[in-house]
Length: 78
Length: 208
Ligand SMILES: [Zn+2]
Image (cartoon, rainbow over all chains, first blue to last red; front, side, top):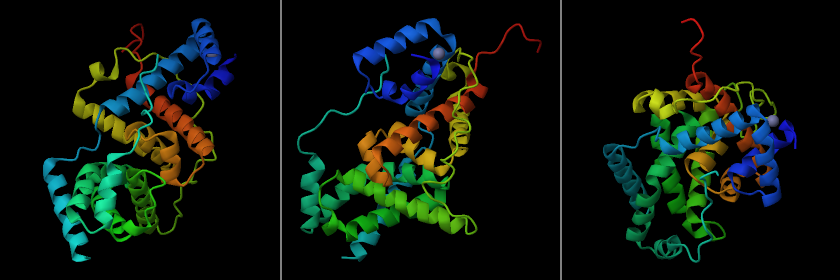
């Protein structure tokens, strides 16, 4: 496996869609390639940091306002 | 090992019963569905349009549309996926209206590989949460995702922020599974590259 191959399998790697054989090849490659190791690690961190931080907060106040508006619009259509 | 897991295949989703009741005219059942998904729909709309007022309107319109079209929901997909699809379409329509001179579609700017080829090979140390406080971090994440073309932003939002499966994301966006996978990869790589500017390990030996 070379660096380009690794990149093409990157998403499947994070989505746990890889065969044990490919997973093994990726581990072998990253053990000897610092660039790919960093890309793998920091892409993982990218996904995690977006998952772990709510960047558009929906406050209770906003949620209530939305909820009331939605329900009154829908019930008006009945 | 990556910590991301796809949801296990479930038997009958609890929404199925709620949808059936709502179809039969039970507004309390519909209201429960609204409660379950109003926040998610708002976030999706906000991510795609990058505008809070638009996102509020879209959330209301999307649920209204779902309510009106409930009979057309066949149950081949999850109710939530169907709802997200309505919200995505409303969001894209809103974007088109806003940028009258420019067509906005899922395909915009996704042909290019620009930014998807890794150039920054610095480690992120200490980790982002240690480098920035929560408000700063949210600001960086917002700014960074805003820079992505809508076609990438939507895929990344549904898949990695809202945790839809690849298949659900494809369905919600009207894309093929391979198209979702390819966009997701490039979205992740572009975000990684842009975030590296903020999170990369500072070189101590460099003069300040
Ligand atoms: Zn490599």
